[in-house]
Length: 133
Image (cartoon, rainbow, N blue to C red; front, side, top):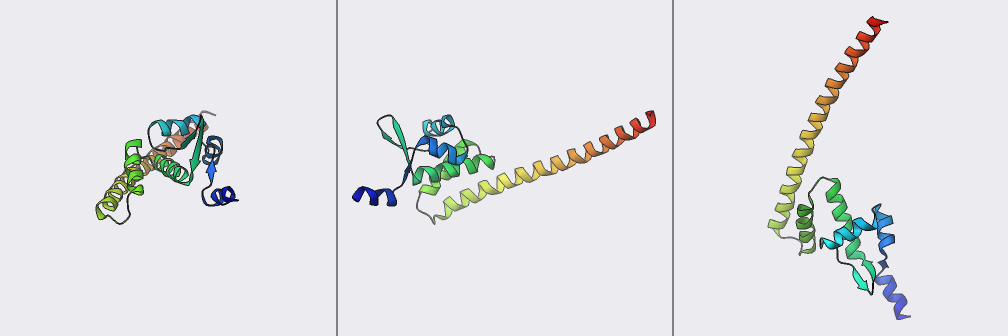
C-alpha cells in the first residue's frame, strides 16, 4: 500500500513517455542529460524521470523556442532552482528577456521589410508577364 502512495505523490516517467510528451527524440532527452541540464534517476540502465526533470525539460524547450542559447537556458534554469525572490536573479532573467525581445522585434521588422519587398517584386513580375502575353 505504501508503494501506491509513493506513486501518487511522486510520479515517474520513462524516457519514452517524456520524449513523447514533449515531442522530442530520446536522443534529444539524453543530450540534455549529458549537458547536465536534467538529471534523471538511474535504476540500472533505465532512466526514471520525476516531476523536477519534466519541469526542467519544459523550461529547456521553452528557452530553445524563444531562441535562447543553451548556456543561457542553463543559467535561467539554475536560477529557477534557486530560492525565489532574489532581486539580482530576477533582474538577470528580465534583462535576458529584454534582450531576446529586442532581437525578435528586430527580426520581425526585417521580415516585414523583406515581405514588402517581395510583394513589390512579385507585382512587378506579374505586370511584366501580363505585358508579354
